[in-house]
Image (cartoon, rainbow, N blue to C red; front, side, top):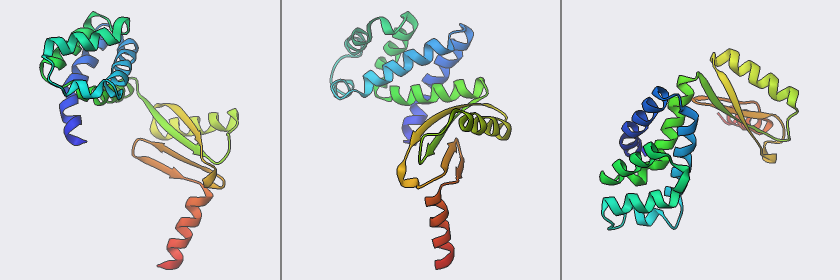
Length: 177
């Protein structure tokens, strides 16, 4: 994983810097996300590691992506193909989103709850996280009935476990130690 990130970082940084320069950060994020999905597809992924010449591989990949990539996005694909790096596109897209979030002073927070949360509760969680992290917060919500009650919030390295399952687990650990 660390090796993929190391390989992907220069491509993501170059794409991000260019996107900022062109005021097209969101458009680039969409292009890279699409390209990452194509690169991860079970029918395409083996071809990326195959014996195709770099130029043919870039033409193949850009042909699949069609109008989803602009000329500059297609050029990135050509450069990555020439360097044998198309298989790291998912990592490039992931790093690009991290660069974008840091640039926009945003963070994505995963909120897992036992039941669906009301809009008021989600706004309260978002407001408190924004105060704590000094960034805009985008919530990604999901439901996990095994939590029994409460929520688990993950934002970057921050993990807040307010679930009953988590509290019971900590109580069990305290009793056993």
